[in-house]
Length: 405
Image 1: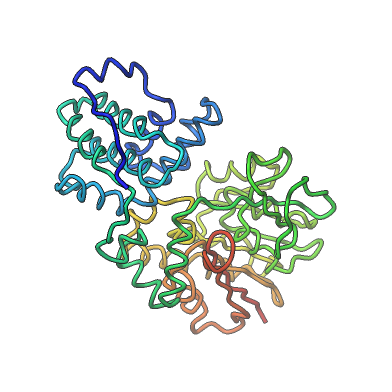
Image 2: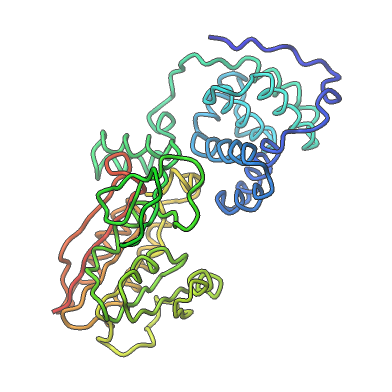
């Protein structure tokens, strides 16, 4: 039904002397994301001083607007009769925030969604567009609309949706896309011998517990179930030499070190290496695409959690959908093959390596393993696993277990 909203008088600007901290932060973050920044980093930086309620709403607005960007653009055009791509970015983002609240959030008063969206435009020195934003949002309804295609309905680029449908089938692709429109569940890592916090629910991954909601309890690390599913594939044993080649931010390294290992972690920049070293783990700055400074056949176990497109994590990193391009996958593939080949040269006979990504793309997964092992004797791919959002809980993850003769 149509939302009945009061008309905003010309003197409205003086009636709202202060924007809510949550909407102001959300608008600023979305503007910076447009310039290439990462939403998760910005949310941490911009909401740390907000009250919990304001921080939660800012997070919902930012991630919701990014997840549903094609739908919000369509709605903006539908209710305005204008191409949203031709609008100033500040006007477009204010419409996104207003429409997201009006269409997808139940507890937001319509007058607040409209009024503060108009105020955001005014304070962005786009005062001439304030009436336009007011008029568009006052037309907004919650009535179902016919989306112009599956790519808009599922909020994925057409090329990415087509690839998922070809690889996984239309039904599984749709479930993965719809999973990316929802806030991810929270999972905790609980080492063996440590009592889980009250209310935590065990999962099929040993040591991984689903947290039902609210702030995570102190003393427990938040780590997605897909991420936690990788380390068990290494079959770690006490005393083994272990290399984590792309270790930052260190969650999988810490999980591996629940077994007493002789471990070395590394990553390609000092900043990323410090994310791991802060936990007291011996850490090196290494570019794994170049020959590694270790003797051949020295490690019993190697984890190559390769940098990737992240298409399995779209629920928590939604801007990836609108940045990644097909040629980026080819560039990543080339680096990933080098990482895997260089790592395997350091694997002992009868050793085990796991190559993993949080990507759903074959170019970064099976094709990397196939190329790295092609024409090389002594290594074989023992098994392959793929966690698909909407089919399995948590983020999407690929893992290949590679053994040496």
